[in-house]
Amino acid sequence: VPVSSTAGLRDHAILVGYGRVGGAIGPVLLDQGLPFVVIERDHLMLASAQEAGVPTLVGDASLPELLTAAGIDRARLIAVATPDGFQARRIVEVARGLNPAIEIVVRTHRDAEIAALEALGVRRIVMGERELARAMTEHTLRGLGVPPERAHVAAGRDAPPAAEGR
Amino acid sequence: VPVSSTAGLRDHAILVGYGRVGGAIGPVLLDQGLPFVVIERDHLMLASAQEAGVPTLVGDASLPELLTAAGIDRARLIAVATPDGFQARRIVEVARGLNPAIEIVVRTHRDAEIAALEALGVRRIVMGERELARAMTEHTLRGLGVPPERAHVAAGRDAPPAAEGR
Image (tube, rainbow over all chains, first blue to last red; front, side):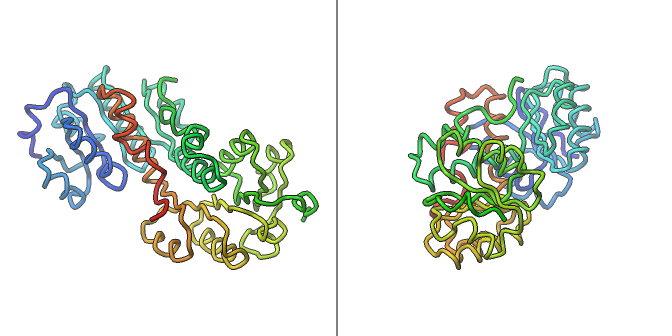
């Protein structure tokens, strides 16, 4: 586990998973000049992050050692982009235990999961289906001739994503 | 199949699937006063649409009879919100055959599916994972202290959803 490159980080983000979702978040953070480290189980997914000089850790992010190596005690936020909801919740629980003040972003597919995540103090829960529905709604409105700005607002895409601050 | 209530429709939308995604699109169309008809295989999913007076058809939307009963020859748009990508593509093919000019909105989970859909003249393709990634990116940026408007734009959520017009 190469910890050296995370030693200088603080107030950083920890991005768990660097597949289709996490791998789309990373480039935006880079673009915005925001420091982050990636934890991913499959080292083959990490090539683009490593080429960009992003610190990466290979392994299971529900292990306290991994999160500690990622500097979770000094991190500002953890974004859990793994598709497996059970694994995601375990990571959230462990992360919360190691840093009670950390801001947590997590994806879920199930309404039933939201209460459990909120009980863990997660304020930023993204429902995949809700975002998909909003995007399809915007397309449908535009395809029916509704002007773009009105379609964007009516589809709820102008609002904060998902369940922030509930 | 109760076709009577669709007989007066024209320039309407046909919404295929009224589950978690389709069921979120319908209320916005109602709110905007845009006429539509729903095709759904499970009649139990249709209660809310029927209570709102929306014409509904129960059955498999890849059957030409169903699409014809939904007035596809006079419709402006069809939005295919079924989660099964294979079924979605079949519906698109049949719909395109029945109305070459119809505007089509479809969801997909696979990049590989996009070219096939584009070859069918679909201009409004929504990728679930892309929308999820955008929403998680916006949350991550906001959680790191980026102002809301900048976070919204940097996350790509200000842009048209997904692959419009490519």
